[in-house]
Length: 64
Image (cartoon, rainbow, N blue to C red; front, top):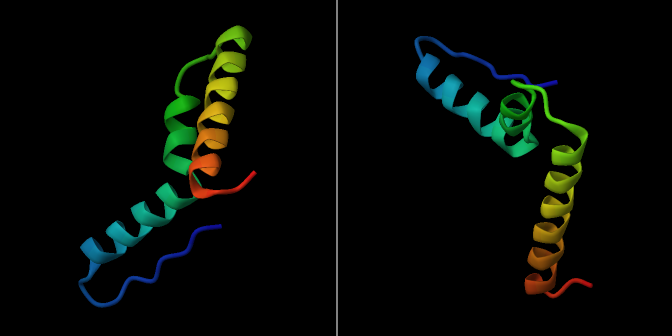
């Protein structure tokens, strides 16, 4: 659960913090993805692409 404390008239800062937290947890990507129906074949391809990207990134950082 995300929680952002808003102090006196600092709505802009609170909004920025909320967006940062949502991005960090991947909620914005998830919301955009769920906006429309995704066929199972497309979903499978997307997951494979993400896994490949994740492996490649980990390899660059030196993890196995």
